[in-house]
Image 1 (tube, rainbow, N blue to C red):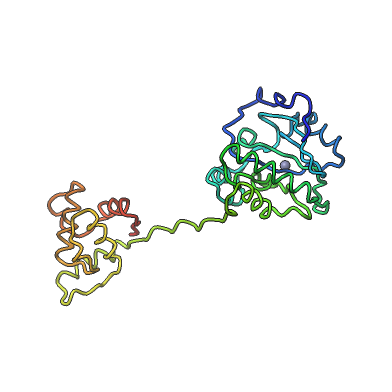
Image 2: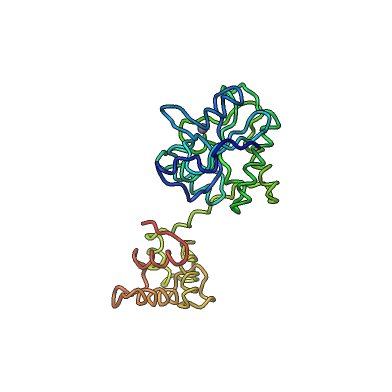
Length: 285
Ligand SMILES: [Zn+2]
């Protein structure tokens, strides 16, 4: 590691907010030569003043610290990606550029031509892993708090090139943090849908039918909710919308504030939606 000048106070905090910090972003510089690259990321250029990152990771694996605080590296990015980083999930495809990344991320520029051909030496990859792991450990983050510029800002391609295997980097960071390689959790299952008209049909036909038929499987979901509400005995949770279920649903309607004909035990959309909200189903008409 090499410290450069007043890196601890070299920043753009006078131009905008710094923090809360949520992750570590990795870039490639599109430059050649370590000392030139350090000078560029430290000082920037007329269109983009420095620092352009917090540290520059050279091809030999040496980390050059050039700034601390707000730095010009991330630009505007996708709020859904920020949410994923905070939740330690694999980021979704970036398709928005509305959030100021310079306040939310540490940035490390890595010496590479960025042409997709310039190889990433092992020492440099190892340094990226160590830097990301050190920052994540300091903040109590997991490995999914490391991300690439290309994950954040639509149109960006960095970092890329032979030897840059991002999944391997994230797994190595996780290993250093003493946790299992992160996986993408399965998406939360969609709420089951209840068809209101089929339910009404069952509520109207079932009580007079013989042999307790089940005419709509969704009835079971309503009965389970009524059992949870303490309005129906579990014995009657059988998928058959009989007189007991009618009475139980009427009790739910009264609980919702309905009276008279509005509490006749035949589901209406607003009472059913309220029940669904409490018991995890949605209603389609
Ligand atoms: Zn970048």
